[in-house]
Amino acid sequence: MENILAQSAVRLQTNGAPLATASQPVIQLRDIEKVYQTKTIETVALNRVNLTINKGEFVSIMGPSGCGKSTLLSIMGLLDEPTSGVIELDGRPVQSYSDKELAALRNHKIGFVFQSYHLINDLTVLDNVELPLLYRPGVGGKERRERAYAALDKVGLSARTNHFPSQLSGGQRQRVAIARALAGRPEIILADEPTGNLDSVMGEEIMDLLLGLNREDGTTIVMVTHDEQQARRTERLIRFFDGSQVQ
Ligand SMILES: Nc1ncnc2c1ncn2[C@@H]1O[C@H](COP(=O)(O)OP(=O)(O)OP(=O)(O)O)[C@@H](O)[C@H]1O
Image (cartoon, rainbow, N blue to C red; front, top):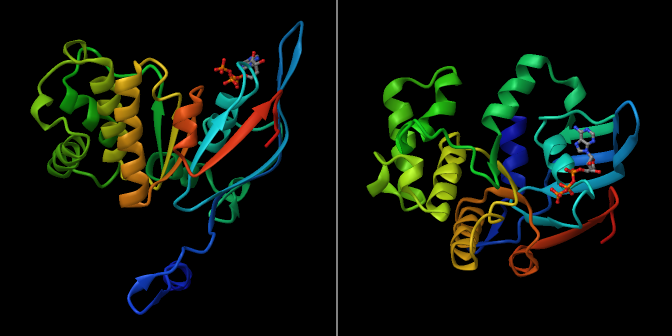
């Protein structure tokens, strides 16, 4: 019940018109440090980062190579642990979640999109999209297929379900990867240079798709990019340098 009240509190309406959604943090990083230690060198990848991502935001992260962008995304997505600091999801420190709860969060709440798509070449488009749902308790074969078809429809690839990744263009492969993330119905998409391997036309198409998911479905998106023009299309641009936020 508390949850329902909290959700409705940020969707106030007057005269039928939606008010601007009040800020509701979904990811909060507090004093996050990440230090990689090898035999010969210590690298401070993230240096006391404080950052809040609000529900429904589309945030892009830019910065020179090696400044910690991918590390930041991995930590936000609970794929990696910080050396110190606190990550909160929906206002609750992840340290307080059990391993089982964390696994569920990683699988349900967050979808990942990578520069190099990470598709399995021996599987059809449809099977690639269905694959992560195989590991989701409570989602049977029929629902899996329905969700995969719906996600492929959403990214405009309904006609390609039986193709293999090698038969698709780079932009289409990235659409499949986005559909795979969408099939999990994530609240948050973390995208690491999703247009990095694409020419500018295909890159724009992928940006249009991500912007649509954000505006129409309210999906929160955090995107690492090297492309200034694409970053400017998002609501908020955060710049990193040497492991710290500079703007
Ligand atoms: N597993 C690791 N072991 C040691 N050092 C690492 C490891 N992963 C990343 N680093 C170092 O941490 C720093 C930040 O790396 P990260 O990949 O987050 O940068 P980035 O901003 O995403 O770079 P790029 O734009 O080139 O992808 C770099 O100096 C990198 O060499």
